[in-house]
Every structure is written in structure tokens, then in C-alpha cells.
Figure 1: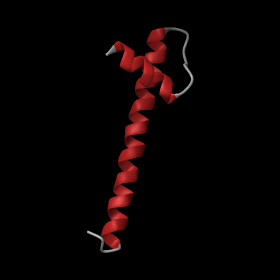
Figure 2: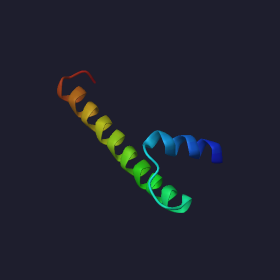
Figure 3: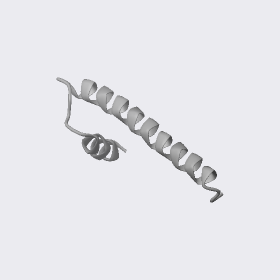
Length: 55
């Protein structure tokens, strides 16, 4: 699990913070922001498909 977290955190962008604990906190915030962004995109897609009558 630790290896997965390390890869995920690196995929989110540059390491930020003076310590690993601070870098992990930033990665958690970036992960939350990523989840919100993806959820918003899916909601927009669902809304548009219903407006177009595809569902």
C-alpha cells in the first residue's frame, strides 16, 4: 500500500512540503480535489446525455 501511495502522490504533481508528513497532507488535499473534479465531470456528462435524450 505504501508503494501505491508513493506512486499516486507523485502522479499528482511536485512534492510539496519540508517533511514527508507535510507532503502527504498536500497529496491528500490534491486527491480530494481530483475526486471532486472527476465527479463534477461525470455529472456534467450525465446531465448532457439526458438533455440530448440519449438515456
